[in-house]
Image 1: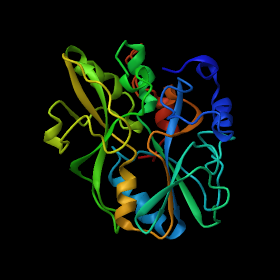
Image 2: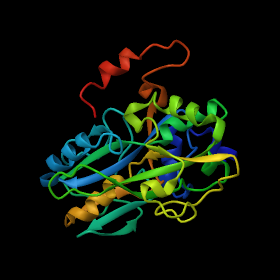
Image 3: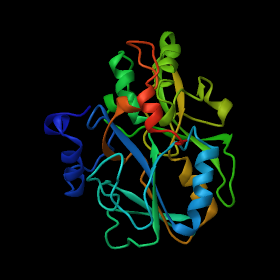
Length: 283
């Protein structure tokens, strides 16, 4: 639960707090109504294969914006956000292994290309607005994420399994959770699985591969959505000498409204044709 001053921050105020070290927690629940995104940064020589990887795996890797080579400031999702400084934690990959870093200012290179990938935090406000629980926000934890046995379509050296995020949903409202999130196809859309976590290779809900475990109570179903941490497995497999991602759960908060990615609005039952035109060609 976001409380105090942080509950009313604008995206710019939240990014400033992150830059200054005043916010060191995962970003779920911050700036409700505004889109948060996953981050992948690669040397230019790897970008064609990675872009194709995203296009062939749009469920876990919905590409929202690609920055020109050497450019660190967003151009579409925000006019002031900078990928070098506006995330609380980053992962620096070198040869398939990673370490966490707090800023990219000292390691930034002119040959880097940044990819902004949709995040399931974007549809959480819509779930919450219908009264559905967002357990990791309620408990002040990072969202639980799991490596599944669901294969991604590989491109070149980029190979790996799909990562999913999990939210417990009351049994009687699972279909409703599907309906709400299917309205956001560019930010993972509807779930990939519900119930029986072992069917997708998850041995224990209490031991997520990323993030924190949350309580799943009697009468609730674990529901799983494709997750933008998936590219990190593909990067670990590809073993580029240099790559950067966000740390799972520590997202980049943009100035774009979540509603701009809502393809079907419950109020009128009509497709958001303006958004479809704006995002044409985006996976």
